[in-house]
Image (cartoon, rainbow, N blue to C red; front, side, top):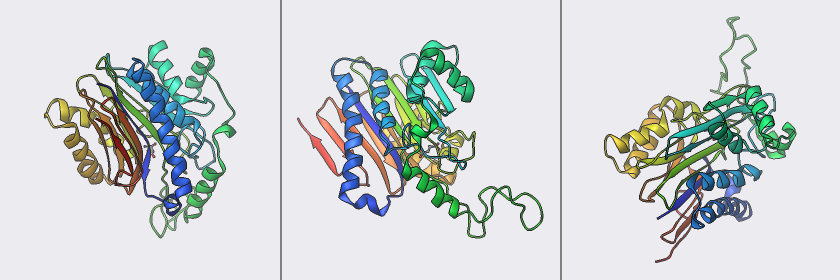
Length: 331
Ligand code: ASP
């Protein structure tokens, strides 16, 4: 038995997504990613290779908030985070706040396989990428027209900047405005989880983070146990959503613990996190997870989540909204 699931972020579904042309582009991107990972599993490859390949496809697709097409900081930079974890030996690698690494998931994997560390950030991570000969690009490579537009729209919603003194002469609260918090948020973080034919689980996640984020802000995606986690015999998890809530919930590890120690089914463990624990912290989002028997769970508390999955039982699904729009099941 082998299986793979991918996500391309969770959130509100903008009206234009209902338009069939844009929807078709998302479906195509998700399909390419899930099929790239599945082809590796089908050929007897490892879950680690499968999740890395699937995430790489989504990083290269400008529609998604990872790699090319990443969400932008409030100064207009793309700052990327990624992680990968091998459930067999529980090895992990992650990078955060990198600005020039074309495929951050590949650098995360090098950190796991070629360094003594788990998480490298900023300049140190990029120096390591250089030493490893990974492709480096100008930051403009990541910044699409659409992300610039989203940043401008988010910043228009800000009435009081953090740097402006408030009425009492003290520093304003970040994001504070008379009409509530400034709109920050994004969509399109990407991730993959897989089980291979040898029973090994793996997870990977990659993101540009939240639109209009502060420089140096790191979300849940590269934090092992928060946005990404894998342990053989238990589950592999990749999350998307409001990263601060997922970090505080230690979300991915919370799911694994619920399965391992409380003996919840993977579905029940994911449900508890997504529909109870994350909302209790004021957050929203979704996760994809796969268990040791190839069971795939994809759940979210937002309007939609870009997602796709495929298993050796012949099941294949690509979906965006709450219902599974395209599903095939062969005997
Ligand atoms: N979880 C990501 C972060 O907070 C964002 C997302 O999934 O959209 O960086």
